[in-house]
Length: 234
Image (cartoon, rainbow, N blue to C red; front, side):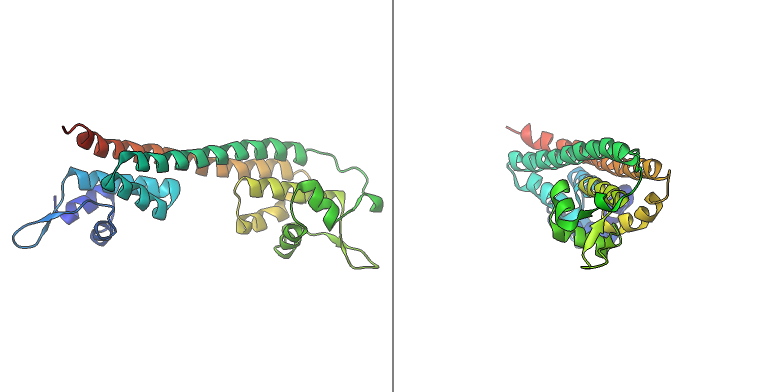
């Protein structure tokens, strides 16, 4: 195959294929007398494996895994894949926990809000198991908006704001980044919207984890095809 043939079958540009060769993601190529590259099935499968793995673990780690296949022994590449699957399992476990917790938190009745029910930064941080600086960062990012003590000016969290902090905590544990949360939290402060919107947000995160898991499976299949011919040699 020519460079253009590999690029077309993988869905990359010719330059991207050359970059993968340069980075060691593709095995060394042979050249014609005129200097043109000649690619085989191993190059195609390497490119296919990399593209799938890049979705699952990111481009840097994907390159490391495919290079490990070429460099041997196979155990190192398989260990890297095992670690990637383990991280995805942890992500999925945290996501399930966040979904359960968010449903419970969002459905809790607020009742009558009293001044005596408010919590300080240190009290809320201890209750959530985070640092006070984390709560201050969430305040700066407009994720959780506490009141201020009228005398001392310190942050005070009402029950509704404590609920917001608990939701942010669960979503952050599930892998949600600050920017999407900043857009989501104003919606969650409207009565009756929190439960539905949090579940919807976590469902989107669930879809992302599933896509990464499928990509790892696809990448592993391509890597297996690379390993088998080598392992069958005498």
